[in-house]
Image 1 (tube, rainbow, N blue to C red):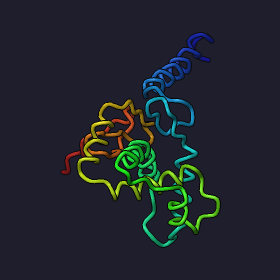
Image 2 (cartoon, one colour; image 1 turned 180 degrees about the vertical axis):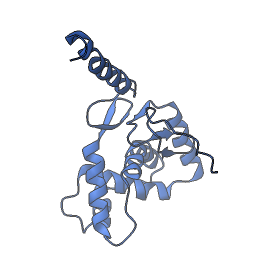
Image 3 (cartoon, one colour; image 1 turned 180 degrees about the horizontal axis):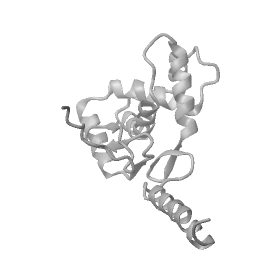
Length: 172
């Protein structure tokens, strides 16, 4: 039996401590949060529900990814506020008609559809206003989904910082 009890526990304790510190460095997140937008939490459950419900509409069609659902829910408050300001509000009943195939759509799914319909009606000035607002917003995305880029209005996938990429080995 090599070493004392203290030395045998030192390595596992260091690994747990290191993992805890690495995970806590992922940014200010709440458990179950896909994103936090100006102190408003968008939950993983909301993202999953929106994706599942929207994908029910056309099972053979292109699937809505969880990252795209998250991006839409991040944008929704800004797009819907701008649509209201511009007199182009989309009502809950209008959104519900578009997704009539979905039984009991969640509030987040209704908001997703309202945002999708509203953004199509906005002019370039309104869209520029939204981009400006997003640049000033405090948006934290769970690293599992990627990183939010407010200038390009995308969520880009990122490799976790604990995974090291290596250059391909030279062939002989």
